[in-house]
Length: 149
Image 1 (spheres, one colour):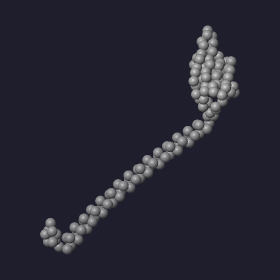
Image 2 (tube, rainbow, N blue to C red):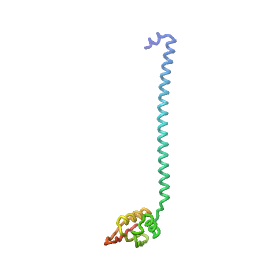
Image 3 (cartoon, one colour):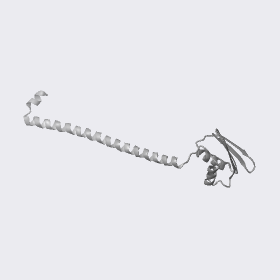
Image 4 (cartoon, helix red, strand yellow):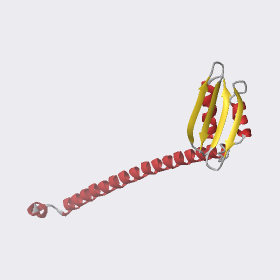
């Protein structure tokens, strides 16, 4: 190989050096272009993930602030739930008894599904945990009581 290079004329050697330099420069340019395109797509993915996170965070914050969560249940909250769920003709005789540890709510209902809807809405409006549900089904009426603690 050394003999081959020694037999070349200076003009041919310069052409080979220019060709090798051009190929090396093209390889470097392709590598830089590839790295930049990967960086650009990663940056786009990062910005998309960041905007998705911010969107979900804002919506979650708005939802959590719009729902009032209570530690104490009173008659006005239950009346508000009964009115908002259109249960005024179905739910009656609401009674609340509370002490430091538990809150017991009892009522009469003509429909079991409506009773469950009320219980679910009340438990969602408080940080208290639903621990017990009792109901007695008579001919025309259902007596329901549930305990939150």
